[in-house]
Structure formats: structure tokens, C-alpha cells
Image 1 (cartoon, rainbow, N blue to C red):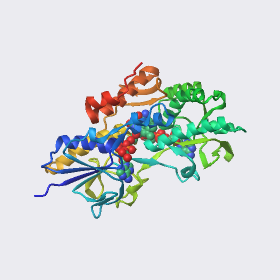
Image 2 (spheres, protein in one colour):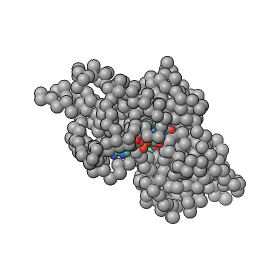
Image 3 (cartoon, rainbow, N blue to C red):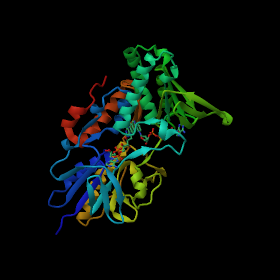
Image 4 (tube, protein in one colour):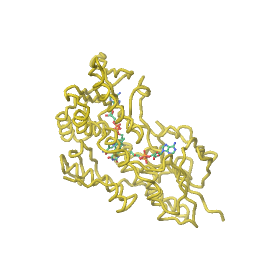
Length: 403
Ligand code: FAD
Ligand code: NAD
């Protein structure tokens, strides 16, 4: 009898966790396991704010996929171009694939909500290349300002759209990096403006108010200004327009605009033949797509309601990894004609970094700030490495400067 083919698309947190668990559970006689990813490396999406600010190098935030997969897995470096679940076909730059079980883990894209000019003029922290572009762009603005005969200080203004976890973590890193950049490029620091623009009435909407106050105060000390309750309504090559009270608008001239105001699933989902909303598929409890028992969705392309709160689980790496474990088990269950298991979220808390040595977080039923919270964030980062690549990868790529 032909071995079934398990095809996993994407080697982010969800896809790679599925793969490393599949390779433990299923041997080459039982199934052919194929992983397709556009790069030969995995990048730590959760470290992209550091790459974007330039506080770590892009290489620190990535590692070769070959280091964490074994001979049970065929790894294909290719761009997925189309998914058709009705025909059970996946087209890629390396040819066409079919499957018996498909796992889609192609991650997220920035959500621009149709706001004019954002796609063309704003930068983002969506993958390692866009994060590198943010870093290079800021450095270029600094390098060219010093050469300009007639100086336009708005070149040194950085606007961050969105004060969710991504925006706040990025501003925390920038707060550390700007003094270094000013020294490097001989720029008086008072010329640099860091502005966070948030649509909601508070930064980090929904997070513990005491911790939010701490975060805002710490960022202010690093020179961050806040414009709260003022959505960005347009971006141009020159900056952004924000909406203020009573419909008034203000234009903010800025050399750099980074859009960190929300995410959606990978656009390939929308033409896959499965119903979706903002490219996220409302999966069954066992992570299967509705109407397609052979298709599993993992990570940011999946939408799942938390029955206790009635609200969707947020798109996080923590959840993507837990889903990957369940999906690997469920594929094995189906192959053994056993019932599948439902996804049960084990909430380990949330930590938001505010630069290299500061953070806020909730875990073990407690609140953390400052160095203890920052140490906790590093433990969380190291744990993700450990779960995929064991002690070896953690020692090679981990963060160990805890105090
Ligand atoms: P991803 O990790 O984005 O992986 C998708 C993979 O698919 C990538 O390898 C990509 O190269 C590949 N891919 C995409 N398109 C194609 C294609 N067409 N063909 C082939 N391959 C493709 N969450 C937390 O829990 N904790 C945190 O501390 C945290 N920090 C974050 C910090 C930042 C700056 C950001 C932006 C997000 C953070 N998140 C955090 C959220 C978290 O990163 C995401 O929820 C998580 O990455 C989702 O995992 P995923 O596997 O669905 O997708
Ligand atoms: P988000 O959706 O959590 O936050 C986006 C923010 O942008 C919101 O505060 C929203 O009000 C604001 N916004 C929306 N439209 C706007 C506009 N027009 N102008 C100005 N502001 C606007 O997005 P995110 O921060 O990118 O996070 C995405 C996911 O990744 C979340 O689930 C988050 O929890 C997760 N994440 C986690 C961590 C962590 O755990 N440390 C870090 C980063 C991201």
C-alpha cells in the first residue's frame, strides 16, 4: 500500500513545531513527510522588533531548518504560489504537490484596513526581510541627514502606527538604539522624534492598566511621544495623516513610518477554496478546516474561539506552537483510526519587552516589571528554541544575559 503523504506548508512556529513533532511520532515507513518553506532558514518572528531597530543582527534571529529536521522529512525550499483543496493540489516554485494530509502554516501579513498609502509608503515588521529594511531605512535617513546642506529634521522622525505589543516592543528597542545611532552618525539626539500613534483610547488595549502605565512611563523616559485615540487615516511619501477630535486631521511629516497596527492571515488562504475571514480559517477544535477533513490549519492562518471567554484566541507564537503539537498528534490518530484531540490552550501568560533590559508581563498569576520581566521574556524566547531544536539550538541561539 502507498504511504500517505503529509505536506506541511511554512516553517514558522506552527509549521516547524508540527514537523518536529511529526518526525518523532511517524517514521518513514508509515508516511512521507514533506515540508515546503520559502527560505532554507526559520526566523524568530517574535524577535523582529529587535532586528528592525538594529539591536540584534538578522542572523541572530534565524537558523537553518536543516539543523532541526531529521531524515524522516523531505525539505523543499520553494515559494507556495497556490493552494487548491478541492483538487488537493499545491503549486510551488519547485513544482506541484499533492497530499493525503495538508497542514497550512503560512503565517501572517500586515493588515492595512484599506487605509490609503500605507501599502506603498509604510514599512513593517512582518518577516526578516521587512525588519532588515526598517533597520536599513532608519540608518539611511540618519546618514543622509548629516550630508544634507539644508537640513529637514523630519527625516529623523520615526512614526510607529499601532501601540499593540509589536509597536510597543519596537519602540522599546528604538529607545535603546537611537542614542547609539546618534553617536554613530554625529546627530544631536534632540533632533530625533519617536512618535507612537494609536487609534484606541489607550496603548496596549486590553492589557493590565497598571502595567500599561508602567510601559508608557518607561517609554516616555526613552523619548517616546504618544498620540493616543488618533487613528492614522492616510500615509504618503512625506508622512502620515492622523484623525483628531471632532474630525480634525493633522499631517505629521516623517522620514520613517512603521505600520504595526494589526495582522491578518496569509493571502494564499483566500484562494484556497476554504471559507475565511481576513485570511483566517475558523477551524474545528481538532484544528481541521471546515469541510476538509484532510486539511489542518496552524498558527496565524487559523481562527479559533476560546469557549470560556467567547473571544478568539490571539494570533501568537505561543498558541501556534501548542497547535502544532496537537496537529502532529491528530494526524497520527487519524492514521491509526483513533479519535482526534481538541486543542486546549495552556496559557503561560504574556510578556511585552520594553528594550533589552525592561519589560512588563503577567505569568504564574503575578505581574512583573523591569529586569525580572525582561529575564522572563528571555526565558520565553529560549523556551521556544528549546521546544524546536533542544539544548543545542538553545545554546547556539539563546539569550542568556538575564541581569
Ligand atoms: P510565522 O511564524 O509567521 O511563519 C510563517 C512561515 O511561512 C515563515 O517561515 C514564512 O517564511 C513561511 N511562508 C510564508 N509565505 C510563504 C509562501 N508563500 N511560501 C513558502 N513559505 C511561506 N507571539 C508570542 O506568542 N510571543 C511573542 O513574544 C511575540 N512577539 C512578536 C513580536 C513581533 C515583532 C511580531 C511581529 C509578532 C510577535 N508575536 C509573538 C506573534 C507571533 O510571531 C506570530 O503569532 C507567529 O509568528 C505565528 O506563527 P505562524 O507559524 O503562524 O507564522
Ligand atoms: P494588534 O492587533 O495586537 O495591535 C494593533 C494596534 O494598532 C491596536 O492597538 C489597534 O488599536 C491599533 N490600530 C489599529 N488601526 C490603527 C490606526 N489606523 N492607527 C493607529 N493605530 C491603529 O497587533 P500587533 O501588535 O501587531 O500584534 C499582533 C499579534 O501578535 C497579537 O496577537 C499580539 O498579542 C502578538 N504579539 C505578541 C507579542 C508578545 O507576546 N510579546 C509581541 C508582538 C505581537
